[in-house]
Length: 550
Image (cartoon, rainbow, N blue to C red; front, side, top):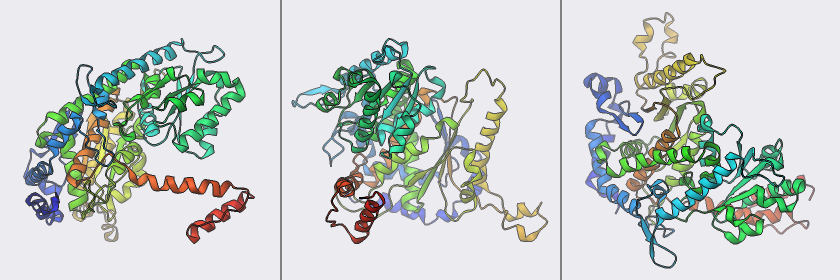
């Protein structure tokens, strides 16, 4: 279906013609109950949507558009295990990774017989928990008999961004003896820096690669293996390397005991995998109990997304508001600004989640889209950003819808600093002030009340009317992090359904990989190769070879 031909699409298009006239000052003045009416809760998250440039009729028509696009049916199909990833003929079941143990989600197995994937998930979770307990208790020791003190996670994309972001976020819950380091970049300086200060005898390396063929990951893994073998010998590999993979033969050939291989499934996309075995490093850090709370947070939002009517469905509404801005009002970017140092990698995590899912120009049926999809997602923690890019947010020529995330209590727990309450009050005050300033600005008349130099009035005027969401929770716990991730995952699905996209493939990452594989030998050959690329690429290769003395 071409959704642009529907009455529902036409209704939203008509609303968009009046976008410039949607003034937040007037919307709040005309409706004293706006903030209460547009603040909804899911789990521990309180989500204030009142500072968005939408009205009740606009939201109602956006909901009607989602229903026209089949969002309720799509949610049910995903949860049921239908193969909604059509281009790869796969189910999309990241929600099964955090499903309760007694839930049944059946799909066809390799033998054609249906089986319950939730059972498979909990078998892996139990194995992860048993391994985690041994490492944390010191029962699992390295080749020389010493307990593990350092964990090096080697992966890329979702196999790195997810566990690394969650590890950084949940710093207050880490095991005091265990420190995690994450390696993803094939730039050799990444692996060198990660291993430089570590003792091989107390280091455990987690290699995360579903196929165990990912070029960047395996290059870093082999370098780490060489580092370990040089220090402890080849027999040490089995005690210092574990794998998150499905390729038993390749894992065994590497020297890893397959009893220490933790699997996951082709219905888990990398950017949706932090709550699978990909989260092993995180579980080792925070413990199996906290990891279970993390999964419970996801599950809370999953259940809300599945059951709540669309007009009260928090992730669906947030996704529809983004469609309103991106598609109908041509706003190109979205900023995510967590007022939490521990959430400093959350915007980068959401970049992959959103941009790899919906950064597409072809619908699921293969036809080109005729509208804007996929916002550019970016951000940094507050209050740092206030002294850099917030200038553009407040007075620039581009309107940037913004998400503010803030906790009611401090993230840090440190008996050496018992009197830091003022810090958190100041942090929260800045968060609330930024959303207020973006929404309501400061008029020229208001500036003139205190500014005596008329030439400065325009410079000190803030147009306001810049939209934002504020998400609050009592504290940054494993459960709250799970809720936050699921909130954005389901926004992504909502947007993709309305845009008619397959949000669960990522063909856009493939071409560069194929070309790189062809160029590697051309860079390394001792005999100058016959180059058949474009003239620019040929020149770059030749120049590089000269710099390397080849």
